Length: 164
Image (cartoon, rainbow, N blue to C red; front, side, top):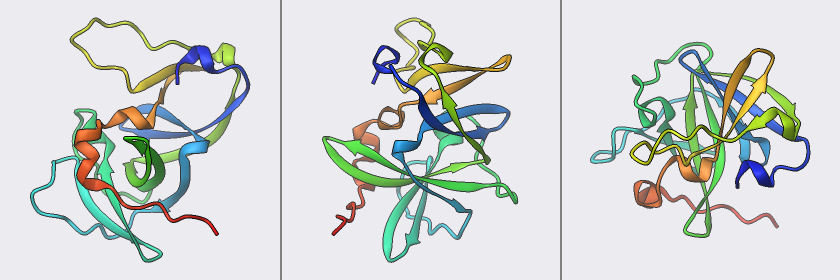
């Protein structure tokens, strides 16, 4: 989804990685959990921290800091897991994303969102849906479906329970 397709007020969950503020469309967020025990799985990519038991379902947990080239997320009182629904090859999958802290849910008008900057062809920024303007700061609005490639997440699929 591009910035051009945003024509109405939308709600975003804001969170921090290091000192940077990011946002996710609340429509992709299932819930926010306190940091819990993550079971490591051998021979997985470095950004894959392991899996958690979420009410009987196995949910893979990824470290967004590692995925963005930062140091690994350190456990603090504010560390949390944002459980999101992503689309992989047209199918829904549930993953947990580690964040340093969750800030708040905010409303953003379309005129508060700028397109992602054009940095050239060698730097991948297709996962940035846009740059939200808030007070005198920017926040990066992520397209969670594009943060990880389908190849990176292929082995992480956990079936999405169908609501009855």
